Amino acid sequence: MKIIQEDQWLNQLKKGTFELSVLLILRKHESYGYEIVKKLNQLPFSSISQAAIYPILKRLLEHDLISFYWREIEGKPSRKYYRITEKGEELVFKRLEEYKKVYQSILTLEKEV
Image (tube, rainbow, N blue to C red):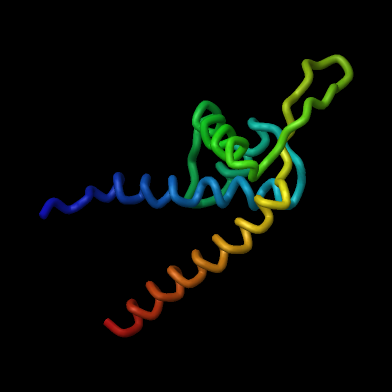
């Protein structure tokens, strides 16, 4: 059996949390792509490029977990702002509960070993 290299494991872990993290950001307030990237990159576990956020946003849009609108800003180009939908709110609650269970299970195992 081949063991996953440390960086691959960490990358997979991050990918699994990006959608939830984006939904949590949008749960607090509406935001545009670059601003979401900046917030994610402030987290100690996260590093994501601006180009990588758009496939995540597209996937969330396709599943009706977020919506968007264009905001005009005087003297600047319009920005596409994203906001969480009711369906997205429900999923955040469900995924957070699942995430907490997994996290607590790992901590329990660590204590037992």
